[in-house]
Image 1: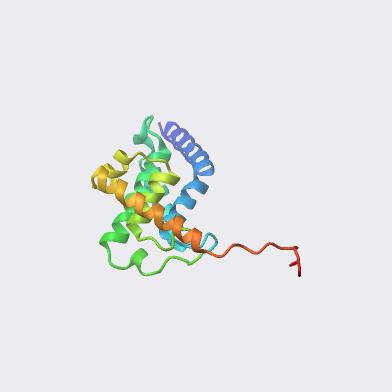
Image 2 (image 1 turned 90 degrees about the vertical axis):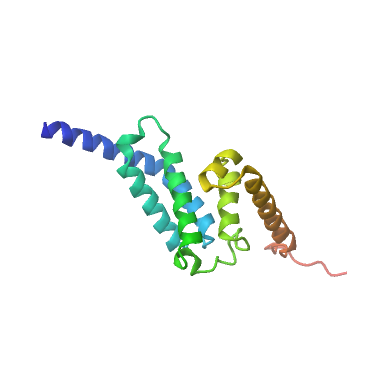
Length: 168
């Protein structure tokens, strides 16, 4: 009996490691977009990812055919929402990094935009996950998309290296 448990635990650990190797980077990127941190300086995103992965590992045996990525993403999103909206402090203590593409958005706008556009979660699923109406999710997503596009239009064009200015 103990050998069966050890074998099952080893298989579970291998499966989870394979999942993290395949999905960890994308989940970290989603978490970084949510927190609005810089890609190379993202302690809040890493904390969110660690919590989501720990929860997914704890529930691994109960997944039984469910998508572990979707499971981890849902936990990541709901944990971010709870922390950003309900706990004063936490993720709200630090401002988004100015270089973040979603820096000008509220936590709710970032969450909906990441779920809808980056993760391609349907409006209905996003609404159900966040406890909002589908119309509200659509309106917030449209407003956030417009804000991101306007910010990109107003940003100065990047300098081209190695090209000299031509004098007339």
